[in-house]
Structure formats: C-alpha cells, structure tokens
Image (cartoon, rainbow, N blue to C red):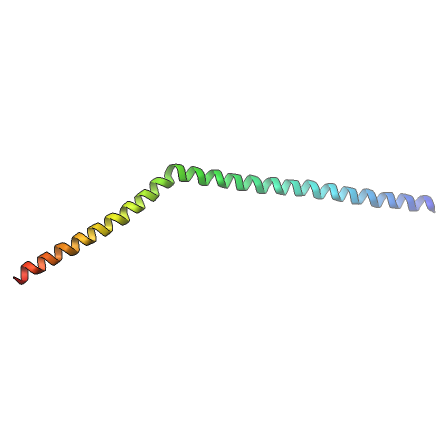
Length: 87
C-alpha cells in the first residue's frame, strides 16, 4: 500500500506541476498578446498624429477660425447695408 500511496502522491505532484507550467505558458502568451496589441495601437496612433493627424487638426482649426471671421464680416456688412438703407 505504501508504494501505491507514493505513486499517487507523485502523480498528484506531477499534475500540479503540469498545471502550473500550462498556466505559466498561457499567462505568458496572454501577456505577450496584450503587450503586442498595446504597442501596435501606440504605433498606429503615433503614425496618424505625425502624418495625417496634424493636417486634419490644422484644417479643423482653420475652418473654425475662418467661419468665425466670415460670420463677423457678414454681420458687419449687413449692419452697414441696413444703416445705408435707413438713411
């Protein structure tokens, strides 16, 4: 009986070790996938900001600025027209 108990103990230890190794491999793979995804996202965002991102941001700012300037010009022109019509 003592021999079978030792064999069962060794089998349990081997199963525990195999489970630990499997979890380590799966954990390492999960960490690798996560780090790779984060790095790829970082590279994509950096590329977009360096090339097209800055250009798009500038165009949006320019359009907002010119819209404001043209609106003030329209207001000024319409006020002048109204004043001239009233005179």
